[in-house]
Image 1 (cartoon, one colour):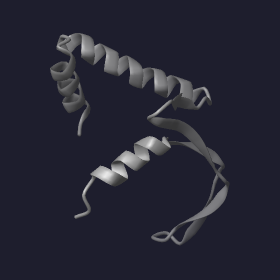
Image 2: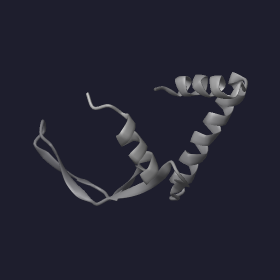
Image 3: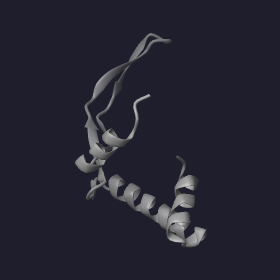
Image 4: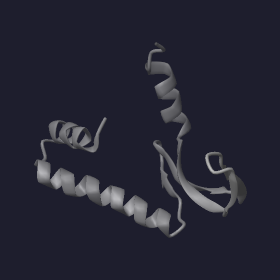
Length: 96
């Protein structure tokens, strides 16, 4: 599902106009991104947590050149679903 499809679905569910929904969705995504860049986790009760995971420093290899390089420690964004959200997905999404 794309951002445009999410916006279209929200417009259909709420009856709000598309420009207002677009601005709102963009604002939510921007707010999550800005706060994560500041080092904060975002907790959405019943949905999940957007959190930062620390990756340790490691040595990487470029196999085409045969060289090694140091990859410094860094943070990556991650998402951990709430237990009730995870359970709902497990119970309703069919296994193919």
